[in-house]
Image (cartoon, rainbow, N blue to C red; front, side, top):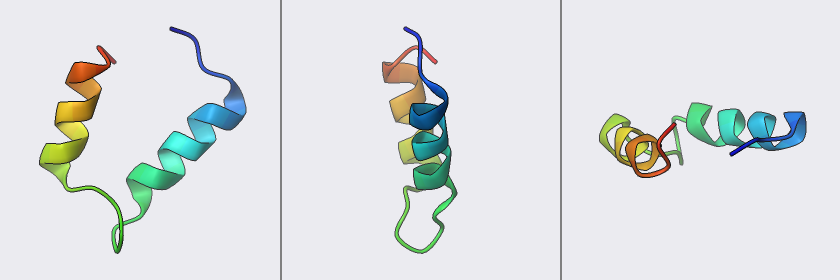
Amino acid sequence: MHFTQDQLQAIADALADTSAGLTGSEIAFLLRTCEI
């Protein structure tokens, strides 16, 4: 799977949002699920 620069930036922004973002466990689960 290939991501565009804009897609990667959107993913990074979402992961970096500590107030409304995901927990570390949720991030790990999603990365494993997507095989990233």
